[in-house]
Length: 116
Image 1 (cartoon, helix red, strand yellow):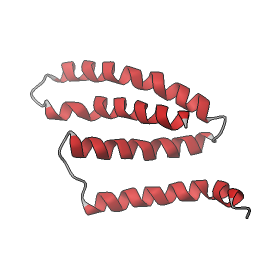
Image 2 (tube, rainbow, N blue to C red):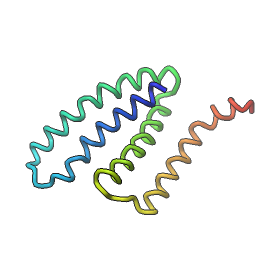
Image 3 (cartoon, one colour):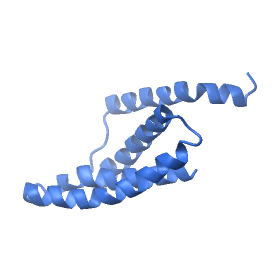
Image 4 (cartoon, rainbow, N blue to C red):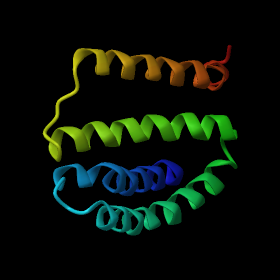
């Protein structure tokens, strides 16, 4: 659970760093780059321990897949609430396919837990 919480926090910082400036298009690019870099710094401070802790339970590929799903979930919330851009049906379909990938990744664990 600590891994997931750290990844959510980490991805929140990274999403703000990467996309928050889109509402400030008149701000000079150098200022935006510097501000984004400063916002992204805490992302690394959260991401590294999340992966360290998580690697005791998950493989590196599994950690990456989990991180990507969290990243998309955080981005969807950010896009709707901050950018006021709702995803299209094709975006939701693509997200659904990624969720299918997560089920495929977790299938061995789920099957083992179910006694299969």
